[in-house]
Length: 116
Image 1 (cartoon, one colour):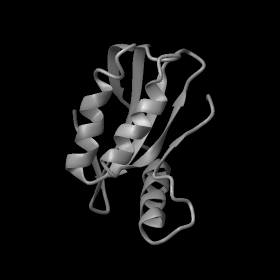
Image 2 (tube, one colour):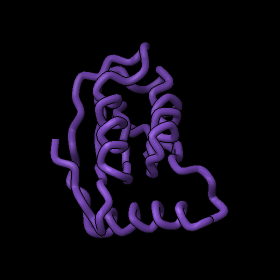
Image 3 (cartoon, helix red, strand yellow):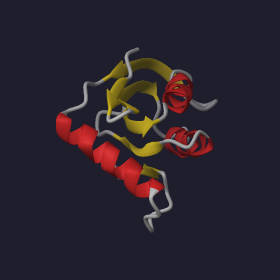
Image 4 (cartoon, helix red, strand yellow):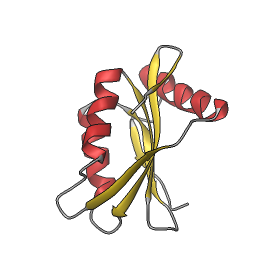
């Protein structure tokens, strides 16, 4: 899977399908993301999928990507789709990452957001 690059950072937008809601997918993804020091957010979609945006150094982004293919123990991931990032999404991810790395008051690097 191709990981996009923007201003030297690696970033992805993923759509995770399968039994991925109601199985602690988002909470566990946040723990994995925090462990690997990546920034972004995750949210449920109204169609039953999970939507993930992530930015960071390549090794760390890859670690979260690899985890997304299996998810937590109660999940059954059937498909991981890479969604191309728009220029606006790339800039938003970049700003979120650099803001968190320069002493911004928001200490959460990876957020769980409300359902789309």
